[in-house]
Amino acid sequence: MLAFECIGLICILDKEVFLNYSKIFTEILQAEISPEKDNKREKVIAIKSVVDGLIIHGIGEDQFKSFFEILTTNYLTTKDRILRQVTIEGVCKMLFTKNLCD
Image (cartoon, rainbow, N blue to C red; front, side, top):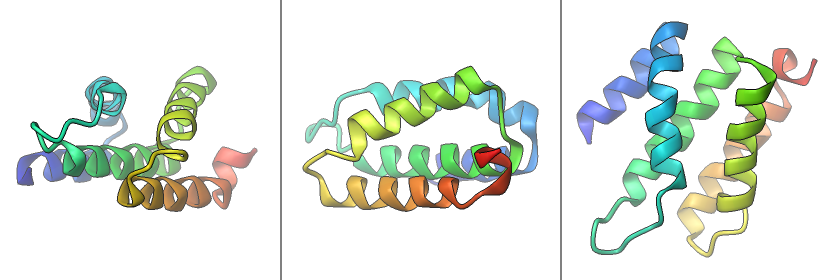
C-alpha cells in the first residue's frame, strides 16, 4: 500500500507519470469492492490521486469526463461511508478549482 501511495504522490509532480498511471487508477476504480480482497484502501488512494492529478495537471476533456463519470456514478452513491466521503471531498475540490471549471 505504501508503494501505491508513493506512486500517487509522484503523479502530482509529473504529468506524464500521471497520464501513464491514470489507466491503473481507472482499473482500480472500476473494480468491484470486495471484502475478501480488502481493496477499499486502494480505492481511497486511487480517488485521491486522480482528484489531485486532475486539479494540478488538468487533462483532456474526454479523460476528465471519464474520471468524473466514474467518481459520480460509482462512488457518490455507494453505501460505503468512507468511499462516499472521500469522493464528495474530491468532487468539491474539483469544483472549486479554476483551471477545471474553465
